[in-house]
Image (cartoon, rainbow, N blue to C red; front, side, top):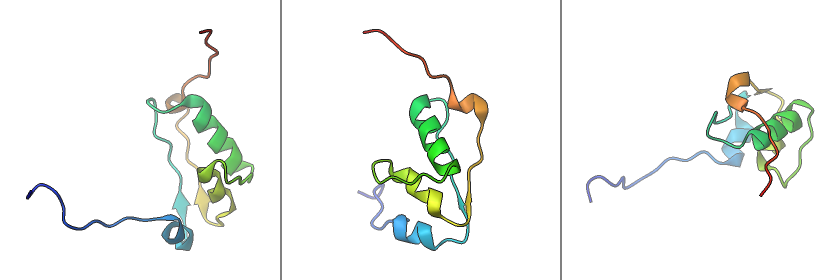
Length: 80
Protein backbone atom coordinates (compact mmCIF):
# COMPACT_ATOMS: atom_id res chain seq x y z
CA UNK A 1 0.00 0.00 0.00
CA UNK A 2 1.35 3.39 -0.94
CA UNK A 3 -0.27 5.06 2.10
CA UNK A 4 1.77 2.98 4.56
CA UNK A 5 5.28 4.34 5.23
CA UNK A 6 8.09 1.90 4.53
CA UNK A 7 10.33 3.43 7.22
CA UNK A 8 9.84 5.21 10.50
CA UNK A 9 11.90 7.32 12.86
CA UNK A 10 11.31 6.98 16.56
CA UNK A 11 12.86 8.49 19.65
CA UNK A 12 13.25 6.17 22.60
CA UNK A 13 14.47 6.61 26.16
CA UNK A 14 18.17 6.53 25.21
CA UNK A 15 17.80 9.28 22.60
CA UNK A 16 15.63 11.33 24.96
CA UNK A 17 18.19 11.08 27.75
CA UNK A 18 20.97 12.28 25.40
CA UNK A 19 19.10 15.53 24.68
CA UNK A 20 20.39 18.72 26.30
CA UNK A 21 16.87 19.81 27.17
CA UNK A 22 13.67 17.80 27.59
CA UNK A 23 10.29 19.53 27.59
CA UNK A 24 7.54 17.40 29.13
CA UNK A 25 4.02 18.22 27.93
CA UNK A 26 0.86 16.53 29.14
CA UNK A 27 -1.82 15.51 26.69
CA UNK A 28 -4.57 17.82 27.92
CA UNK A 29 -8.28 17.40 28.56
CA UNK A 30 -8.61 13.87 27.19
CA UNK A 31 -6.00 12.34 29.51
CA UNK A 32 -6.47 11.13 33.09
CA UNK A 33 -6.27 14.16 35.45
CA UNK A 34 -4.94 12.04 38.33
CA UNK A 35 -2.16 10.58 36.18
CA UNK A 36 -1.19 14.01 34.88
CA UNK A 37 -1.02 15.44 38.38
CA UNK A 38 0.90 12.44 39.68
CA UNK A 39 3.58 12.58 36.98
CA UNK A 40 3.83 16.38 37.28
CA UNK A 41 4.36 16.05 41.04
CA UNK A 42 6.91 13.26 40.66
CA UNK A 43 8.91 15.16 38.03
CA UNK A 44 8.82 18.51 39.82
CA UNK A 45 9.75 16.97 43.20
CA UNK A 46 12.37 14.71 41.57
CA UNK A 47 10.76 11.43 42.59
CA UNK A 48 11.69 8.91 39.87
CA UNK A 49 10.01 5.51 40.02
CA UNK A 50 10.10 2.80 37.35
CA UNK A 51 6.40 2.05 37.92
CA UNK A 52 5.66 5.52 36.46
CA UNK A 53 7.99 5.63 33.42
CA UNK A 54 7.52 9.34 32.69
CA UNK A 55 8.72 10.13 36.22
CA UNK A 56 12.21 8.90 35.30
CA UNK A 57 12.66 12.22 33.50
CA UNK A 58 12.80 13.78 36.97
CA UNK A 59 16.52 12.99 36.95
CA UNK A 60 17.21 14.64 33.56
CA UNK A 61 19.37 17.73 34.21
CA UNK A 62 17.69 19.80 31.48
CA UNK A 63 14.03 19.03 32.13
CA UNK A 64 11.25 21.56 31.75
CA UNK A 65 7.67 20.95 32.86
CA UNK A 66 5.35 23.62 31.44
CA UNK A 67 1.80 23.21 32.76
CA UNK A 68 -1.53 24.38 31.39
CA UNK A 69 -3.69 24.35 34.56
CA UNK A 70 -7.06 24.11 32.80
CA UNK A 71 -5.76 21.16 30.74
CA UNK A 72 -5.07 19.13 33.88
CA UNK A 73 -8.77 19.03 34.76
CA UNK A 74 -10.23 18.00 38.08
CA UNK A 75 -9.85 14.89 40.16
CA UNK A 76 -13.17 13.58 41.43
CA UNK A 77 -14.25 10.42 43.19
CA UNK A 78 -17.00 8.38 41.56
CA UNK A 79 -19.18 5.74 43.16
CA UNK A 80 -19.79 2.64 41.03
